[in-house]
Image (spheres, chains in turn yellow, orange):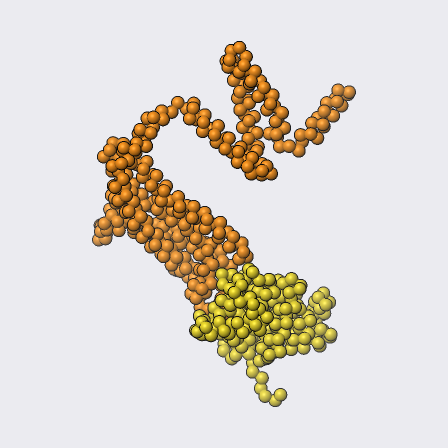
Length: 247
Length: 332
């Protein structure tokens, strides 16, 4: 345990304004390789914005973001290359409706990584098997249930062999009976040592899989710690209030 | 007091019986009544209603029948066949009464506008014109679609300077009447050192004009695709142009094809304006033969040819629209 842990993501004093709304008020966090960080907090706290800023789907207003040591707020950085190493799973799946599941998965490897079509298809089928959907390879998104779509979306993110994956409320658009199947896939990923940031209120999942929980409120990290400690013994009054509402 | 009560109860009974009906149906009971009165009018000694009251009755009768038929026509709860029959009846009545009572000179009309002997000599000329029209239309369709697509894609990147000039381009060519543009390109451009023959001038003018419309159609198609699709594509590391080509455009095209076919129909019709710069296309040939034969039948033939060519296209466009609606619904 003495070895230095690799820092995957570091944000320093990250601010984000929407017009005159101050959404992120100076967030500084370090996330290490292999960590599963859960972000919780009341709605409007800036959880999603924080996540979207880290891969610059939103432009941060000020502050620094380092991804594997590279400052991605610098204008000279090739964002496409960075993004291709960050998987992103959306709340509303955002599969491409004109492509089948397998085409969704192999699109980026073929056109960004320039992997040959055949090889990408092979890899894609393996990934579909991993998320338990090998028989749905040629189904279009509208032929899949919400849970299945989200699992395809996870496979699509995995196809780029990302170094880390961000989950933006991956289960909150799902029917209750489909949440489990998605969480299982995420839990397996966590067990394989994938670095993950998960915005979610699935406390069961967080308890079992997360190594650390950040509590965001009003654009600030108000508390952080291992899930067991944080859930059982919250320090900040707002954390207590929030947990009492969702527990 | 007593009478008032009776009246009220009568009104209440009336309300109970007819209150739920739309207004035009509450008077259906007048129908057999007026029918009976008209029969009376016909079979009375004079043979036909010759006095004002009789005519008034007939008009009331027709009015009620009309209301009744319209009531059936618009009542979606009636069976389809009944509504179809009502519509047919209405059309028949109007058509027949126009044919019978308008005092039209049908023989003269056919001789002037649909004269088969006048059609005979015109065919070869008109087909030559059709060939030119199709040549002009197809080339312009191709150019304007490609140009419009490029403009729309360029606009989607929201570069302020580029967008400023593109908006000027689009607004200018959408606002200028095609006929003015044609005249300008053919008669004014030579003064700027660009002399084009009528065909090239027409291709240029129609393409410029329609590329602006096509650009707007494509832009609305591109904007109809949810932002989340772009974000998903970009989060995978696709570059903006790749995201456009692989994710946005394939989806936008399905939305865009129906209005685009509509535009292409309009384009084909608008090629007729090239007559003004002396391009020997269909309308030009039609007018020529009309003057030569001193009879408007060739012009009517031209109209029929336009209809014959465009009817499949318009049908095709509505088919695409129905299909795209289904597709768009399933994509949500």
